[in-house]
Length: 94
Image 1 (cartoon, rainbow, N blue to C red):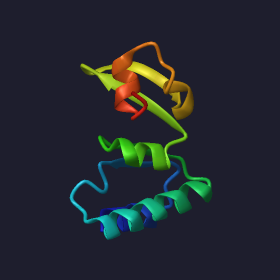
Image 2: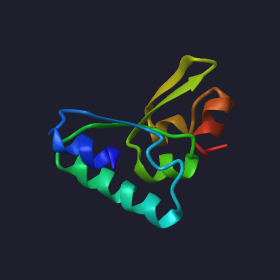
Image 3: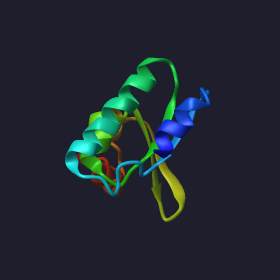
Image 4: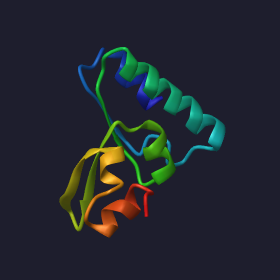
C-alpha cells in the first residue's frame, strides 16, 4: 500500500526501506517487478535490503554500510572483487 501511495505522487526518486521484508515470495516478486518497471520508466530507486539475493537480482549499484559508515560504493559486479572481504560477503560474492 505504501508503494502505491508513493507512486501516486509521481516521485523524482523513490526511497524504499526494506519494502519486501515481511512479504511472502510471491508478493516479494510482485514488488520487485514493480520496482524494476518504475526504474525502467526513469525513476531512480534507493532500495534498502539485507537480502543479498535480492541485491544481486535488482541492483545496478550498491552502497555497503559497515558499522554505520560507507565501506564501499559502486557497480555490484565491481564490488565482487572489493579488497574488503566483508564487502564481498555482503553482496554475496564471498
